[in-house]
Length: 498
Image (cartoon, rainbow, N blue to C red; front, side, top):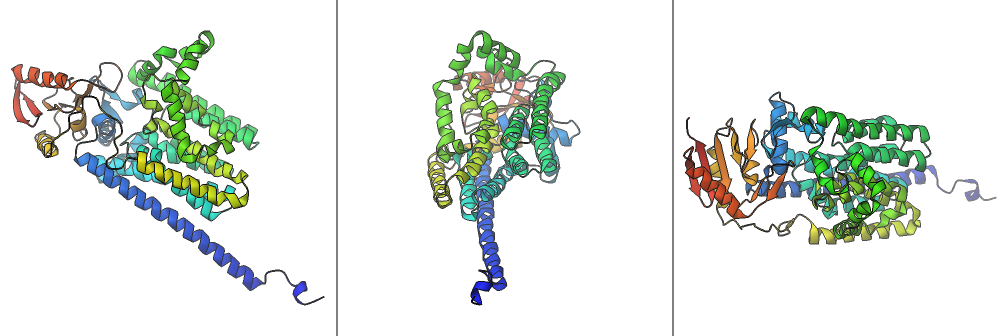
């Protein structure tokens, strides 16, 4: 027997060198993901800052969140003014108390851009659990890094990050962290992530329940998984049937989005039994089919390789598809928060079913497709979210006129404003939305902004510009207001002393 045959294939020094090479390789890919995460966040923040300073962002949703956070800092937790003019705690509309956690940062840097920066940074962190999941299940640092970069490259992730802002968007990274913890049986850390996720919205509990069922059956942890499912379902039930009515005095205003299929959770269940065709029809509209296609495209539909994890997205997909409004079936909006984390997690897990030599190439293809779609569909300059029928292009210098209009308004004065200028006036107790005036002392109208208050549901509707101009004429001719500014279609009115 030779001396070589009596020794291990690798000497201690060789094993140490191998570990160093492996550590360096892991560090290299981790640094690549971290660097991309920071660069992505900075690029999107600069984009949002440009949109904000040019008055492209609206009171709905950015201004709503600013007012709620500002009110919290003033000792009135999550108080906001509804589109119809009612003063209400936000919990009567959406049960998303996680928004209050932004208050300390607002107190340090009191700017709407603080909220936007927090949202972008939070969404970017979702790349980390994608990287960790893929590294665990694919056994490849490179494949894991490519999928994490694909997460950042996804046009839908970018759109949600810059959709300034909505607490539901925080659920994207939080769900991904929850999946990571659950996949590693770290139930304590999962519980913390799940509680934070539930605080992002009243419907998050249903998705947490679905995740619990995945854990029960895919991982064989029946008792723990069923306990998670029960807790998640209970949260949504309490939020919808106890918290919202307690703070609003009525059922959720958003039930109106489901009038054609029952108008409430119990109504939808009843419709499913007595008129299942109505449910099927709502779920198979062209926009819903397009929505599924757009979701699948950046990931090449590879989430089907881990169908159990992908199915966790089903509850939110059903909610989106059943809605009357087209917004929930648009991947550029925050309604995607309960869907997309599970598709990425399913890809990160499912690619482990491929042969080892195919995992890196397929991950690279996913990244390439995501980058291509990001260029074509992402929220970058020159790419519009959607056309607005009555939009009037603002001339150069219009934003400067709006800045002068905002500067005229005292900080503590109740004000009524059109949507986009309202985002700059939201840090106050009373912010009404044109044509609602109530006890406003000032009115700011941009006649090029034709999204105005709706009397029912708590959001805006689009009207012809003539209606906004007619409102301005009524105010100027009423004898109750004096005109403080009239330039370039922007009007500022101050209430005369009574």
